[in-house]
Length: 205
Image (cartoon, rainbow, N blue to C red; front, side, top):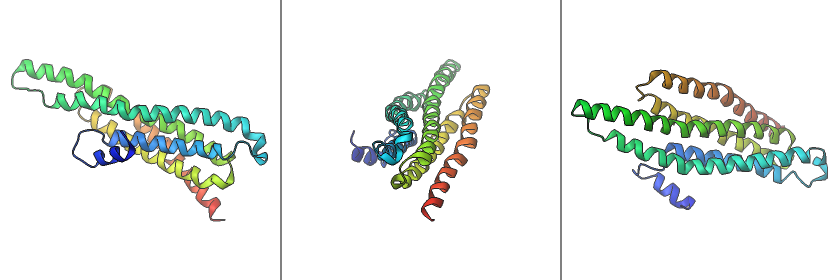
């Protein structure tokens, strides 16, 4: 699917892509922007001392970018069985038991993908902080944009975790996943906002 088609389908009532896939895409773009800062840094005499570090950051950024892009498809694949499970009949006790069993499996799978998106965004923010600190000053604004995008993707993916855990009957598992997501939000949203604020401050000088 081209980007134009993705966005066009996103605006329809089609079940996928949705917020999870959109978050993965935004995270991938943020990670790519970080790598762009690296690309504008390597090969410059002024940054020769950090070139090895920047190249390593770029390799890691490209891996995250590819993972996040793959998670767009995985999010769609996880949502399809969930949407079907919600439509399962529950007239008899047997049907209720079957539906509960199926829902337990698909909700766990549907929560796992946005959780992975969140983890990738956190890792990307760690790299972006390095790009902002060590990368070329001519690309500093791109590091700020990258941070803002990864924070947005992180927050967006978290909502896809929470909407699925809300429906889980296994409240112990739901709480475990919620706490893990909340911990990432608590640490990395302020962290990413600080990167953005630092970049903005440097541009305003």
